[in-house]
Image 1: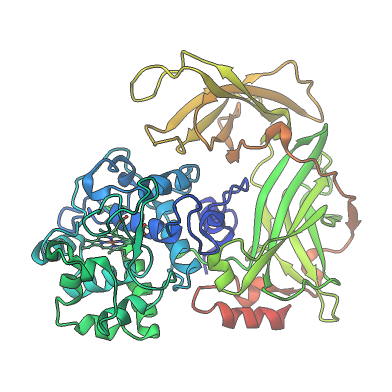
Image 2 (image 1 turned 90 degrees about the vertical axis):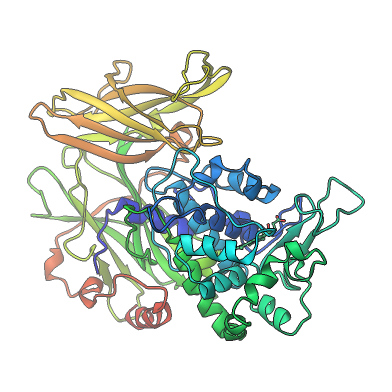
Length: 583
Ligand code: HEM
């Protein structure tokens, strides 16, 4: 087991998959989950998302390694092979989610996973690390009027055999249907031209084997099978390409589910050659997130959230106590030479069970313990860990990051969201990166503040600024801005304040803030979100107590020593049961 905090890419991919949202709260999963039609068009959102992933992938060429799930589809929507209102809606569903650690193509893959699982399909294992294209790629998505040989050749080019082609099409065409808008020959428009008619591939809206059984027993109304225009019946040609052998082999509910889980996993993992995907992103049973040492209302505070799993439909143990423990970074008590400091949560938050279809179908929800602790800036903090006691007589469990604890990397440069702010400003001089006319009208201007610890005497304080979530994805905002000493903010508790200004038209500006100290050491605050800033909800810090106890001498059973650090999709229930015994 190789997970250790902080693993920022893993942490943010894990959050989007299992919490369904960005770390600032915007929810991707709630658009599609629970399995539902789009309010204005009545189309299946899950089906639109699954089809979007297929079309992005299906330009892949196994021989030269080009194309695949790389997000290039957003530049290819004007092509006939990608026509459809479903695609423009999907594009705007996904627009705000990509960032430094979660690519647009990863969002597309997670969208397919959400769509399948929320409508009753299998959980498709997810790996991240897809790399985005910033321009259109070659065309080559199959269209219904093409003949069988053309389709076989296209799937061969993508890396799939004829039998796998049949499986993929059946797994895709179990949700959603054909619209009158772009296929009026297949689905005649209704009386109201503004409301497209949709004829579904089968009689259920769920992800199930009915598309196969209705095809085999001859009751199917799938337009791509039964249409009188024989040019357009591509599903009929494909499904019967091997005398129905493949269709028969996936007609039971179990075989349909396992075949589709396997084939759709392969589909979302088709990426351009050279792209290396991460290990599978599995659910972390105990997760630390939103860690920030900062100033709030002139107090030096350490904020951290600790997330535990909660089995669905079970109440959280009211007797449970959760504590954070930490060591000083500087001074006599450095590294807990004397006291270990400890504090209780400032707030507790139980998540909605509908948070993510993937987590919900694994039988879990989350509970978060949010800590806000006042820290003496001269002592600061070097590492922290947590202790959970169910108060059931079995003793407490400590969570120490598979080792000595969660280390606070540095305290030489700190983001100070609550002193930072945004304003809408008129700006006619902001050039479009990549050319084009200047952006006119209102843009969001961010004034971002960092605290620099006295003594590091920085030769340079600067931030790498990134926003890849820009409407239509014309270009990423990716630049570097120097921060200057801000004399209007009074130095306090051994820190001085620096600030820098950046204008942005995108949806998710994040910054990496650096302090290059006099001695050349580079200190970094990685991936800071800019959504709340001076509107960050204020939570008062809790009290600190000191315990003389040294962590090593306690009788705690170390969770990590038992090697139960992660749940995998397949073993979730078994490990869940083990956790149950343990806690
Ligand atoms: C030869 C291969 C394929 C052809 C010719 C084809 C063709 C089509 C057509 C014509 C539609 C109707 C679109 C609309 O009216 O909006 C459609 C919908 C759909 N396709 Fe395919 N398809 C193929 C393969 C696949 C594959 C492999 C998948 C996924 C694994 C897939 C997933 C979907 C889904 C989910 C829909 C419903 C979309 C919605 O309801 O908005 N298709 N397909």
